Length: 481
Image (cartoon, rainbow, N blue to C red; front, top):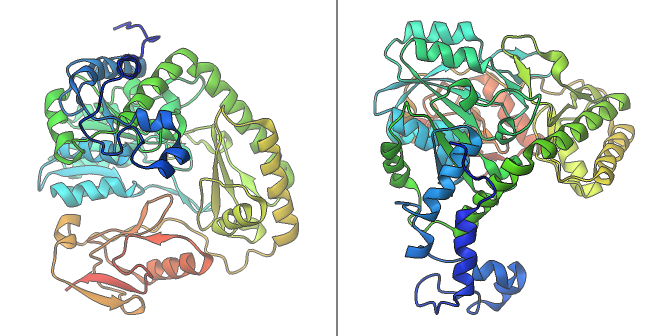
């Protein structure tokens, strides 16, 4: 479309609205911050004055016809899509809208089992049936990889009535499947290709990175711009191609998205898109430079393994997002969550997550060299002070599920609550996951095994934030009666 990417229509409209000094007799009730002095002092008066409601000059996200519509068109152009939607419920909302746009109750969707919980939540809501492609596992790192093209082919051959294929691009650890061939495979068999690119905003603007979903011909992609693109937390974009009905997707989004969309979130998307379109290339070049340097320093330290493109095999580990600083910790005798806790509690460093055997630090061009050095120094000191034998540590993050019934059927089934230690062999009726990353250890409808129970116990013992259960202490599980 070649639109003017220097423009930010929603931002411009909001600035004009502020200058007009309109007297507010609408919501929000804090009236530009005057109604809550402590909140205004904490967030700043400009933030509260910009927290406004939908009105004609500022458009309406549920039915955009002016400045929000223009901003979404600019976003579509910048990301190389035919259409885009601003999402104020994070990539979670975008993933659920994608799935619910293409699947009805009873429809099948092919997806990797190491998806974010938002994808399986969508199945609970709409009643679609998952056909899981179990990802390969790197046995040294203990982590799930991507999907092999031949495994996707096999799943389609066995389920010719499936409606779509969902692909992680990348996984939380930065691992990518052969996206282009999987999209081509899906289209050849008449299926839509959907991408969960919650962690892939930079693929659209950086150089020498794995390809983006829309550049590979995907039909829709959920992009969590706040993660690596510079917008406010909870803001995301859903990208669409002409192969889907744009107005129908809007209707689906409006089933679950708020009618009181935050203008703070939306204007942050408008300005993040503008910034990325104008400066994204150099920003992500700096990001990659920082991450490459950190990876080398970590590996020179010994004990850790900051893995990268050297593991790419052209199959399940087809490509790697080199902006990710994914570090294996188990060989020096510490679970990832233990390193996570030490960094936070002893060194004042907050990383993205730690799980059973790995940690992830999010690096961007907004970091500073001194902060990278501080992280490197802390990791070296943790190894020196706390490193020990890895004997007794759990050695894998992913367990192939045994799916006994669709998620919706299990979630809404008659249930009983059982002590964790007495649930082996039963069918789980709820979610169990470490958050982050939010990939279910158990999802509704899956058979509980001793291996899974061992994993849950170990994760709790090491201090992982185990979530999703009705019992907040995860001492009991809801199982199908």
